[in-house]
Length: 258
Image (cartoon, rainbow, N blue to C red):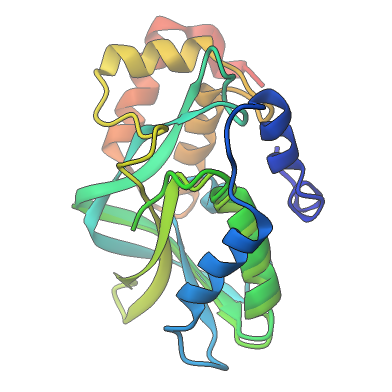
């Protein structure tokens, strides 16, 4: 499982560069420029909200003050990004989730204190934005509130987590907890990136999940953990649950894979 130490030491980017020597990754300066450009539009001194829809739900890593289930309209959660290190290899890429246009998604929002936002989001950028596959439907997730005094440090970690390849584009999107609307950072897919897989046939997704493994494990494990994390927050994602059911019917041994 990915750890905070992995992000603080920039291990993900180093592993990717070792495994893919011919692929250009975003530099520290590019990651920092992306982070600061996003934060420039956020009121100074205010806490930062972050929307998670995949591994952030069950392995957030960053420091946060609170979290809630939230719904995002205009985007849906789908296995639409190739993974060449975390869940696969250069020759046998795995798949991970991305937020693609259209529909609705439920996830988790995290609040990061303002004073930790820079440092925590830098880690997140290292986690998610190595290549730039994310871009900036309805999707339910969990929103996390980061306290203003923690926003800088926490967001630096988040940037390390999410921005290593640039497969994602971070943007501010409105999410709803049911009690209030929040502006939260969300990582949407970059459809122009080579890692964008698009809408794959179900058979391709199942075959990929059963036959690939990367530094953090298999896509099948990623699917299991995401379904488990969502259920822990009372969220049933029919797409993911049906995918898991079909996968286990074909490969029951994967139920206990680690």
